[in-house]
Image (cartoon, rainbow, N blue to C red):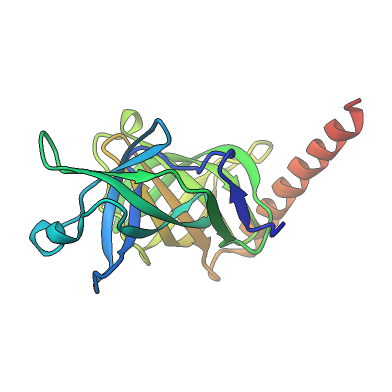
Length: 225
């Protein structure tokens, strides 16, 4: 079996509010939607806009190609439209896919972590935390409970992170480029590639921390029966 294929008994790693890229059979332009829910082997999404251009294409059995990014991995699957609602909201009900293709964006294995961080962009700041880490980048989550408002982050924005690593006295500064964004009204998930201008000291601390995590995980695995 191809390692890049996930059979449908495995979750499809979708989050409510997640942005989905759509290609619809016989519709020439790519479209974008948002996940509403997954229930009874159906995936429920918002009907993409402009509605008047695709209304006549939303027939039962219409083929959709769905792509999205989750946790540093691109997922893609082909599905069919089962139902289209106009009221009380414009929603599409898609078949749960039988096969899902995935492709890792990262070249290095991720190390899970929870490291408090202050994210700065154009002299404004948000609070967040690093949830995973490689030598080349990280995933950072921001929540509404920690921030009065979210900065208007965009793909390719250059940001800086002030991070307090366990065992290190002073916070370290990391510069990075935003590569992907997932957001809803309560939280933002940023995929960040570290910038080449990140200092050697910061890179050394990141490498040390990753090594510490990996050594700890390996020691726990050796203890397991």
